[in-house]
Amino acid sequence: MTSSLSTQQSDSEPLRLAVLVGSTRPGRRSYLVAEWAAHLAREALTGRAEVSIIDIAEFDLPLLDEPQPAAIGDYRHEHTRRWADAIAAADGFIIVTPEYNHSLTPALKNAIDYLYAEWHDKAAGFVSFGLNGGVRAVEHLRLTLSEVKVACVRSQVALDLFTDFAFDDVSEPGTVQPGERHVRLFERMLDELLQWSAALRPLRVSVPA
Image 1 (cartoon, rainbow, N blue to C red):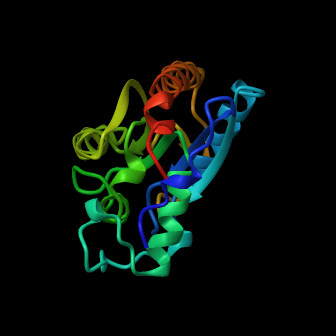
Image 2 (cartoon, rainbow, N blue to C red):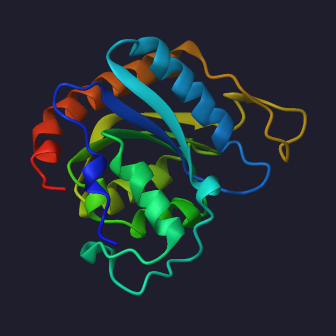
């Protein structure tokens, strides 16, 4: 099967932004952060964009097992086709990621590597978290995404594990409680993401299905 670019919408339809949950670990905090981000985005973008959550964990992607390189777009496995459809349908991404050992999660890197053309000419913003705000994960993400032609906006949100979350035990997910400063940063990042997603739209809609 070839890549799923036929799911791209026309230039007159609302932009579709996806909040991408970038980890799969049981007990993860990423989904809580994604829900926080999606809530803020929906409030801010009512009538201007559709916002959904895409959870990598729901796609059961094994370590990359496609026989052909992603750039060819010949996907043999059902899990790849489902993943390709989900990514192809989005105009831009808010990527939520923790930091694992000075980098992004292996699940997120693997998910990115599964596809190629489905990422092209789209924009991404970042909400990271960790002991140092997860900023080193975002550094690596920017490099990786640039290779699949994703435009990464400058502004980002970096949540500190011990000041922006509330929990009784660090092993528990707890709750997300970012301060107003992070809300303002998120809104700035969202504005940039919307502008870039709209600006890149002519490139996306001109790609033949």
